[in-house]
Amino acid sequence: MTFIPDYDIRFSEESDFSVLDRWFSDPSACDPFPFGFEERVDALKNWIGFARYHASLTGTIQDVPCAIGTLFLMPYKKVAHHCSFYLYVEPEHRRKGIGTSMVRNLLHLAKTRFRLESVHAELFEPSSLLSILQKFQFELFARQENYVKINGRGRPRLLLEHFFQSDRGMHSS
Image (cartoon, rainbow, N blue to C red; front, top):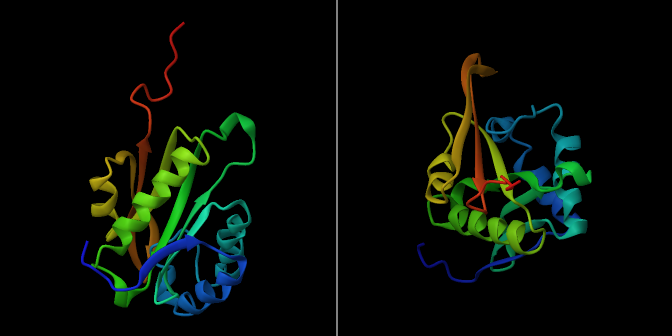
């Protein structure tokens, strides 16, 4: 990671909604996510709503948010062993190691605070997040060609998962 003066990570606060809303006021910011520009307000409220459970992290530079990543915890005990996550890094702060730092910290949070077995991500190619996820041994488990049309072009959807335990949830009988 490139040294970034005054870079830090804190738990997100519900007031960070205004930061997400500002970032996603540009329709192209929604392209890498499974929600469209019209649905963004509800999606962003859901995104930042996990802050109340300390399941969301905000990267800051000089106390100004530059990235927000959130674990989308499952509400039912039967599926509470895994979750998905979203991560957004402001375009001017990309390719500096912030995304890698955020993923590392989200995985640590998922494993230690929430004791999850796995974390998964949904991406639409091309995605700059793919190379970061591969560094952390996320495994591709599904690829759907032409899953979504963005700007009139069909893009594939990739589903990846990171497992914390080597047995991958298999139990001996």
